[in-house]
Structures are given as structure tokens and as C-alpha cells.
Length: 252
Image (cartoon, rainbow, N blue to C red; front, side):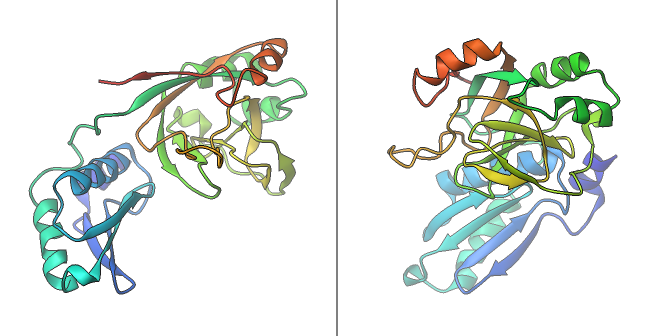
């Protein structure tokens, strides 16, 4: 039902709004859903390939596409009309996801002292720890957006059972590569940080690499499988490089 509302039941969407003096925000819903996230990703891709001249920058959030114009190219009004014409040219909720996406497989230790909140999260989802590991590791999740910290992906959606709330108190700090869960989403932490999400897995994957020409490794639209491994294997791949044993393949 939520997907239907985001797709066709709310006349407010898609909606175009100004941001500052040189930007526009194109929103496809007011809450996260698969169709709204798909539309945001697809529309950004179309803007990058066939948008009106003068677009300087694009990005996406969970359900919106942001674009910034170079105002030296002209007034905002005709540029906005070009964006609105492109928006009206297709059903973005049904548009295929962009080409160039990748499927990542990331070795992950679930539970143990490395990820101490697996049992708590599993109980909140009504599962045993073993069932929770099977549920999360078998779900191919999409990078829905990058945010909160440099290169940090929000991934989803998980099964409805994982619609569990955040904690009421913060965990003081989780390390780089921590995998945490709440509200049917996963977060793969790119920097050490406090969090209200429950720490259920640990990887050796560095999603933010400031020393690299491409510091943000995962991109919106990429898909990820978190493959369960033993703690001793994680220690081995940790020394193999910033991918932490992860592999990537092109998606069609």
C-alpha cells in the first residue's frame, strides 16, 4: 500500500521545489519506498545524460533528486522548465535503474564480540540470532543514498520484520565497517561514530577512502550482499586492502 501511495495515489508527487537561488529539489514521495527511491535514482541518471544545459551538480537522497545550476548559463525559470519537461516525459517510478551499477559481496562477521547487538536486534525482529543472520545475509540490498558521514551508505529494504526502532540511547562508538540495523535499513559505517542503530555485523570494508581518486566507493543504486564469515577470516582479509575481501561485479 505504501508503494502505491508513493507511486500514484498522492497528487503532490513528483514535486519540484526551489533550493536556494540556484537549486531545485525533485521529490518522488514523502517517505521511503522502493518506487520513490528508484524514481530518484533514475531521474538523476536522466538529468546527467539528457538534462537541460546549465546543470552543474546532481545528487540523490532517499526519495529526491537535487540539482544545482550554473546561473551564468541563464535565468533559473527556463532551466526549471527544462527540468519539468524532462520530468513529464516518463513514468520515473517504473523506469529501470541506471546502468553502471555493481553488485558487491562483502565478508561480514555477524554477532560475536565484534558485533555485540545481533541478539538484541534479532529479538526485536522476532527472530533467533541464526534466523536473523540468514534473513540479512540472503537479502540483496540497494544503496539507497549516501549520507550522514562521507561515503556512508544507507541500504535497504529488509523484510518487514526488521521494521524495528532505533535505540533510545546512543552506542558511544562503532568502528569503521560496522553494519547496523533499524527501520528496515542497514547502515555500513564509513567512520567511527556514535549511533542509535544496533550493531549486528562487522566488516573490513572501507566505504570512505580519502586517499583515493574515488573516495566514495559505493554509489547509489549499487547492490550489496553481506556474506557471513568467521572472525578469523575477517582478520585475514583486513590486511589485504581497503576492500576487506569484498568483490564487485557489473549489474546488467
